Length: 301
Image (cartoon, rainbow, N blue to C red):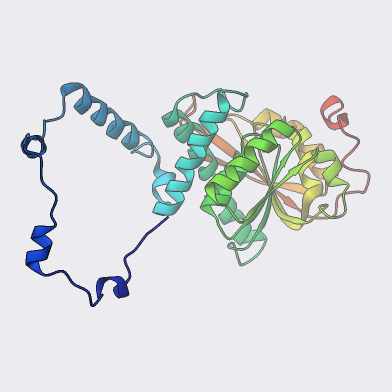
């Protein structure tokens, strides 16, 4: 709580005279004076090393290897750091990510999530609409909030739905959203197959994104029923997804969509790049899709 002195208290009419003030001063113990005159010690070597280590750690997070992170505002950078801290703390008691180091989370997860924004922007503005600031986005199989929560921070005008079926992960996401102070995120605990048949959500999003969830033909059935006609489905994939994409051609077509483009983005992953597979929703998805929970993964189209 902030306590301030009011002007009224400072301007009281009953002032002490200098004589009375000195007269009422308490007797000062000389030993206290000696303590106050002891010179301040210089930091020990161990303390200096600890401070340097802390500075180096802060510099490493968001350093030269994070070009997309560097484009964010200072407030957004602070939000990202809050997210990373929360992720690593919760990761000690539940399996949210295999990555254990702060710098690795930044480079492999946050940067990868931010890297798909430009391809999405270019595709959306060229094929879907003239405004990129006020979009409705669903992150299917959000897990630890990647990429959806990072996108919500980087694009505060977006309304982002994090779809996750596991309760414990939803608890983490709710905690992270509250900690960061995000007002543009909602968390839905359900399966994609159920949400895709729910008329409150079906074909209600401008964009559906997914990262590290399933193979492309399964993702198509999970995500495209949620996308409006004229919207986008974006799958963040590895460095060489051509065979996977080719197998998904039929599933993408059955969902009423077409492959728009495959964009390569720089990455700190093993191969130095990842891909964003972007599909355009051309027509409504037939009502029978998505199929019952579990069916798309067991019997891919």
